[in-house]
Length: 257
Image 1 (cartoon, rainbow, N blue to C red):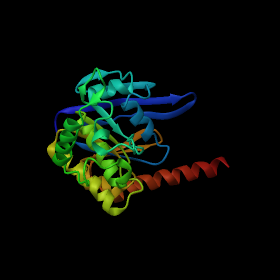
Image 2 (cartoon, rainbow, N blue to C red; image 1 turned 90 degrees about the horizontal axis):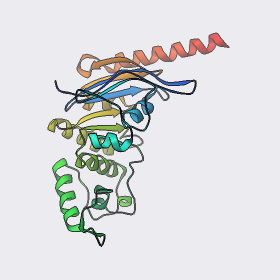
Image 3 (tube, rainbow, N blue to C red; image 1 turned 60 degrees about the vertical axis):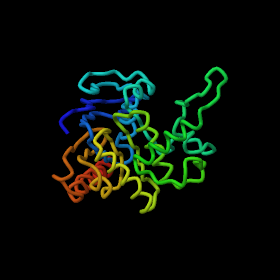
Image 4 (tube, one colour; image 1 turned 120 degrees about the vertical axis):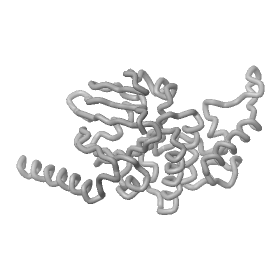
């Protein structure tokens, strides 16, 4: 994991007088899975939106594959290989699996007449999903008929299929049961073993972070306050840091009342 893919240095973002992000410095190597922890309002969503090109940072620098970049839009970020997978997944429930896999990248058998090449798209979708170990009934089933875990897996697979170099996963196991969470964690683990895609995993579940992540960063009040390899830290250490933050916040509230 020596080849650095993504780095931010002292990135900040303000909305008027509100500082949503104060000092976020992260780094991600090729094939690495970085766990990003933080309480609600800590700045995780803001940081992801900056990395996807949705927000422009107020300060700081972003480097991609060793070069400083200025992400101008979501399309620009995707053209570089930075692919987000949000909780809403951006899948169309009424379409089947293989059509969703090729959303906005449809293969045409006759572009002039607007005729889709369903056979080719279906074959390639099967090949990609089988190669990633994604288990679904078949690629002809509508997305609405799949479980939450299966839909999340399709969204991740679609991003990988689009030649993603960096996947930004926004709480992919939120509101899922143990079995479905295990399905997504297994998929992340398989991607890590291949070493072709780097992943930023936003999560609240400490056990999930330590299960699949190589490194963990903690975002508190808009700042990255902790960054360490998971093998060199523990759930207890992270929980103590968070508890200290909560106690400090309570002391501030009591002192101002």
